[in-house]
Length: 162
Image (cartoon, rainbow, N blue to C red):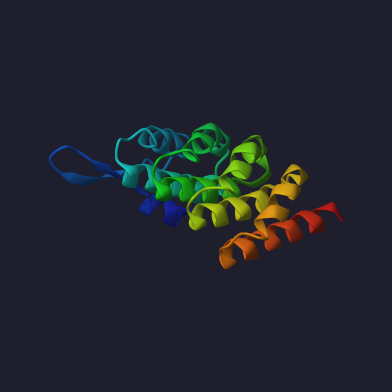
């Protein structure tokens, strides 16, 4: 695990009376375990920060695969920030997150453009050709950033075939 990340990573825990920082253990397995527990928080900010942190450590942790089901479920969270960060995290995990492709394809139709953009980027990074048709539709999204992300994801998929 990146030393800087191990030293700086924290999860915001919001209690009924006060806000405090809870240090996350530097051990990758315990870090993922703590972040997964935080994904169950009633506070959307905590869930969003946890999803983001899971994505940040994804490339450095063998335990990242353990976070895939929770991140897949978070794509349906009621909070936009949680959904966006979950999609980004799944993209950072990459091909190992291929089980979430159907949920990410569904996220291409999210009401919020940030979530649609993050889903398109994640689909490109995961590299599952099964997302091709949905990404082609997303190229016509009303939001220019979503269009650009869908085009970039399709290019990645095409380049991957080579």
